[in-house]
Each structure stands twice: as structure tokens, then as C-alpha cells.
Length: 101
Image (tube, rainbow, N blue to C red; front, top):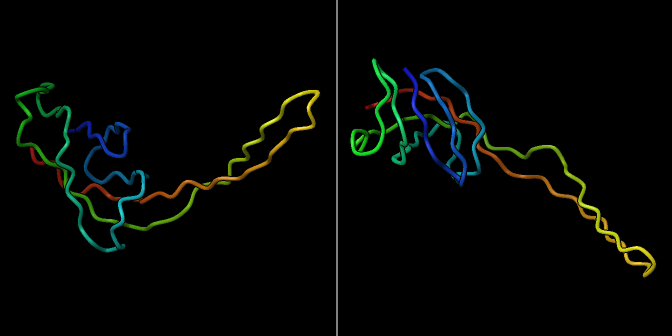
């Protein structure tokens, strides 16, 4: 059994017991979070649309952290313009506990 959820502008295919890194949720480790935006559920057959209107996915937060540093470099030739920037995207690691669908 798996479900497709949407959070943080992205979609994730999750099953019970999976550990997934999603965009930062602002929830402390050890707490429980519920994803209401379920797009599809596969139990014995794939259900989506109005069939999964009340479906939810429950997960517990494992940790919050930052990803690898990404270097952003802007450069324009012949003008002497260059700019170097770094970025570390924040994430929340969650463990999928239960799929209600």
C-alpha cells in the first residue's frame, strides 16, 4: 500500500515505514504531523480524485536539518560583474506511520 502526498510544492510517493525528507514544516522532532493533501492511494487498486477526499497520511517527525550547500554564481562577461552566493535548504525528515485511505 502506498500513497502520493503533496507538501511544500512537491509530490512524494510514500509507504508505511518510509523515511522521507520534505520541505521544512516547523514541527519539533518527536511530534506527529498529518498530511491532508493526499492525491492518490493504492490499496487493492489505484484510487484518486473524489475517491480519496477524506484520506490522510500520519507521520512522526524524526529531525530538522539543512541540506548540502549549493553555490549560486552570477557572472556577466565584459562588465566585471560577478556575484557568489551560497544556499542551504532546510528540511524536515519524517517517518510515515499510517496511511488512512
